[in-house]
Image (cartoon, rainbow, N blue to C red):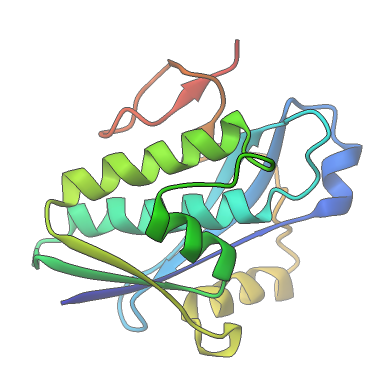
Length: 177
């Protein structure tokens, strides 16, 4: 069995200040040992949406599944652990409640669905407290070094509209309209 931990961070206050059409954040994936990845991500701004963290948490989960696909020692069982109970619920059901669902939510769920299909085995999603999440510790270390979640620069995953620009192996990079 492969066990990975995922987490995400972003700055609510920076979201309103930016003139970009995206919200930037960071995701981290860890296996507690030799896999410790921190990546920049971006999600298209959605009118009147202020809470992007759960979308970013879902992207972190999907990216963890995608990384598991790339591992040499492929196991048929994958456990993803995160400290977001909301993202775990969405990942387990494949649904977001209609009253909060936006295109950004739909794209993040599609990213997870495609990654899970590519993995080809059983994928399960579990809650873990923040203190027990090594991915969260990676993001805290980034903050401790003064590296904010909204840093400019290239990103590994960007979810925007439905038209692909330069697809990742799963075709999951999207272009603004």
